[in-house]
Image (tube, rainbow, N blue to C red; front, side, top):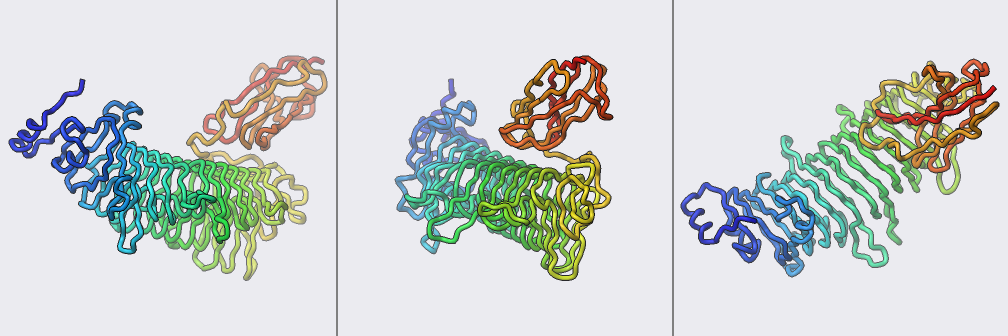
Length: 581
């Protein structure tokens, strides 16, 4: 049973105890949320019970809790049945569902509602922004809401300026930007405070054109502002421009986010493009993010014009099956910037100039360190043809530069895996101490014609190379690698066998595996195979019953062990084979 507080008692409490927080209930104590907010004071709680409330709220400057029953019950039906609908106020200048303009701090919390029907805040230009939520000079917490069916010219869901709110655990979908954009964080120069945007779910939002209903513009636009964008999921939508975020003179971090199945959809008759993240003159750290099954027309991540003194940190990100239908590199482009690119994974990225990474040095002083990364099965493919461009790493320079490539693992990359293009005095690219997919090293037609690893271009220093995959690399610890349910080791056939048996590996995602044979004492008999298992089609591995030295093994029971290479907890699988002599 909920404790009811009579309105008259609340008024007496407010008069006699001016510093005490008060608990209001809607519709029990007030018929509308707006009325309860108006009579509330510092630290009060407004509890809203299920219902559809046709209101738009211009929130006062004191701090309070505005919550539905979901805030206490954690029952999703309380959230989905408590709706603030501002559609009746579409013609008003202030028509967002929630408007914060009076300096609230993060002690103000709004949680547990469906926020819909907003039409944004009208600016002097006559354009609207912040369809659902408009915030200026305030810093509230917006937690666990559904933000949907809102509309404005720009930034149909949220628009903030001179603010650093905390926005978390919201589901944002089905909003319409009549010109461009979904979320805006801007004009907050406070270096000690940052906007926090975390654990939100963003799916399909829309534009105004019935024949092309996808969102035009940036999903998140930051200009200029400090942000921490963490652990969000951006998934299953189509559009143009920055499908994840455009950061302009911003600072902060982009950590632990998932960008899945984002698709560039060209706008008919217009010169449009699509990236996922664009950092321009920004000091943003990218770490532990997943980019999976995306189609772009420009690089998935572009880092441009970053201050030389502070290299961009790009660490432990996972890029898989990113396809670029344009002419640039696919996963990561560093343009007029310094960068440290460490412990990332690039699998089956397909583009023209470079499948995975392209770096351009156009001014002296830029530098790049590329170490501990994994490059597997990347391709350079454009307009239906494989080109002689680079599949894994391409470095281009018009001036002397500093770029070191160390302790990386290259395997199964098509055509030329690593190449250097230099338009001034020739300079070599330092790629020593990398593993190229085979102990014999990389293939180069004159410098290492016996190499069976990935191919390298001219002016690439590759000696000495590693004869085994590098150890100690910090593979992303988030659940991006294969789980045991994602792959299987099929039993050997024939089994028992006398001369040769076949073992088959099947994986739902392209990944590197190692297959070895052990005896009953746990001793390694032979490494059978190491390489990339392609998606779904699988790989067959044969064993002729011989050990590492070519000697026939004795009759007995043996164990074939398959292990995925990109996992901190690899979970090997085993099949038993019986050899009969």
